[in-house]
Image (cartoon, rainbow, N blue to C red; front, side):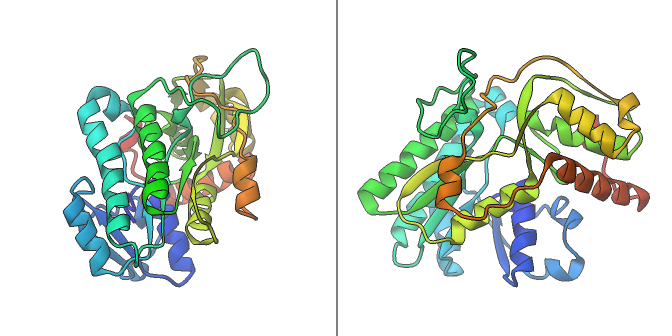
Length: 320
């Protein structure tokens, strides 16, 4: 797994450990601060670190070959703020890094059976206000950020690897992922609001409008289903959670933790990504995908943050 120390990667690791599997994480450095929120020290012994730069194809291939990996879960990437500030670095990690993963799969075709990688809802541009219908997977992609453009490039390259070399792959497009461990990126603000309430601190969500809020455990579960269920081809799929306004998110948070009514505020700026995405093709292709309600997801996230705060273990550095 690449990006295994990130938010989704940490939850995917948690679920793989629950299934009785060991996990190998390929990354520049071993940084377990998110993972440590979810697993015990004993469980960490079953998580193995493979050092290296995903943008170095030879190093990544050697790592895959050394552990005889058959399924590659590629979650490594730089998010919108970094890609905006440094597009060349963003392309190096997000595009060249993804090509490294596919090159390893192609070179080790008899060993590697499938690649599953993180695309993003950022491949879509703003919503068409003349239509209330959900947007399907196969519409024309028109991102407004370098990050989204890099993800489009990855989806197209994945298709070419299937056409040219028969490399099966699945790309998933999360939107606003929330939950313990989500501490960076534009859409981390709902999670930071929950954390702030657990710590008794005020928080202002800088935007408003409608978002698709997806509980991180569900998103990790979708990636693992795509990794292990029978599949052949190269497809990219929208992922859908609870499509709600930020007002509704805050209202639901207030039901879970009434103190939020005096602590959480929000703006009114709509983020420039269509929030109402159709995930019917994903649901048809992979049965019994996990789906946690917004109220349940917020409650579980708040409970985890409140417990960490009571234990003196809640890192507030991401709140500014």
